[in-house]
Length: 191
Image (cartoon, rainbow, N blue to C red; front, side, top):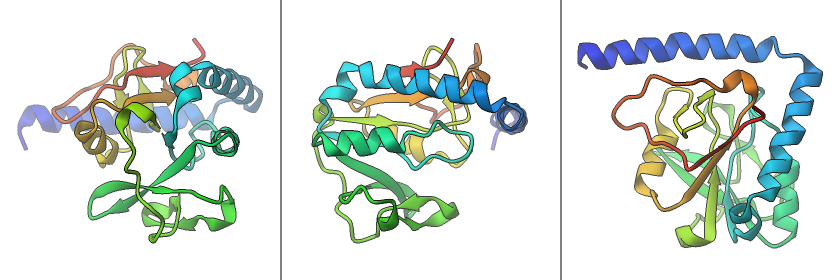
């Protein structure tokens, strides 16, 4: 690893710690209010409304609660897919029943559909991906948790409409960026 790459990774580690602290100290009412605005903006997104397949995630504590929105989209006919790590790569598996009881803990304790669920195969033009992360810029850069799973997936699916929802405490004017990082097409934030 070069000195420059090492320096960028150190900056990212420090920033991740700072963002986690900021999210842990966010007032519950502020979080709820921002979350409502984020979800309303997502629902107004034309590509979200028209998507036949939605690739998303089961939210962790620092992420907006999108599950009710995904279930609603699934009930209107969209296929919902959640990630499962498979050999160092993300595989998006169909959450067919939209029942939380169907999900099981996978690598890193993330809830995912069972391994035998069908994989996402729809055309990018019919699909969108809602991407999690810790830090974001209004211009589309994202900083995840440091393993690169989403960046590798997005690099292989550049035509897939990519969007993220983030709280105000996660928005930064710029982030450290390194080779392999992939910018998203849209960042929805409350600012």
